[in-house]
Length: 317
Image 1 (tube, rainbow, N blue to C red):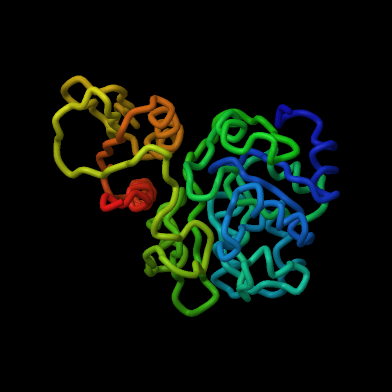
Image 2: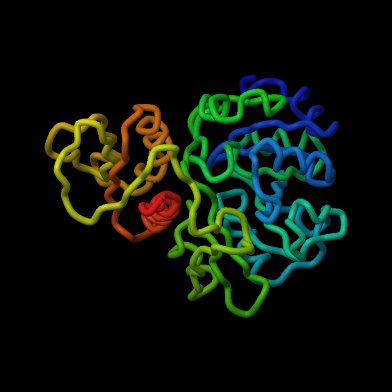
């Protein structure tokens, strides 16, 4: 269904325990009623997601936060006031109304308000908070177009709302600001530099190979089916290999080439990242060679995704 149409049917699907895919400003989300444990379990089943990886709960409005979770810390309130709606996920204490399956048994919960009109309209029409990880098989490339979802999940979901390509193209930044010193648990579409204008200096925690404390923080993640390798210098062309460049295409005869931003714009590079990787993955090359982008602003989040995608593939196996 088009995301800009009547969302009554989609809202009813959510209220009755179904799965609805919807666009956000970051990537497409696979949504279920966050108050319904059985509905949340369907997310894990559809994505083939391990039960230890928690979900993000989405709200229609920042004013819905405290009625759901109770009082929050001054830092959480300040960040929500400044950046919601937007690509920022905040860690709060899990309220009793949210089933433990949504948070993978953690006492904390990840929550955000998406900066996408149709996403907020859907959540408001459903009348429930919506648990929604990215709408893809676990560990694989995140979807930034409805066709990515259909190709990856197919009939595992009940309804897909097509809102066209997403604006940011990478996931939200996740911050735990419950304590005295804010911690970035996942780099994302909101640059650290913008956060620090509100909070002062923050700590950026690296990914985990064990029990994650927030969604999308496993050391190996966000990967195409094709082996991906990060390089720091030019390589000889490969007629059966693909190449993902930041701003200038590589020399030589490659099987497929994608350029993230010919003008060197990091925001554009982030928005194009997963879409470009989807195309390279579909090109049936033997390997995707990737150069990092400048490690500043949102470029830090782009490089984070590339490192996690590369970590999925162990050359020894």
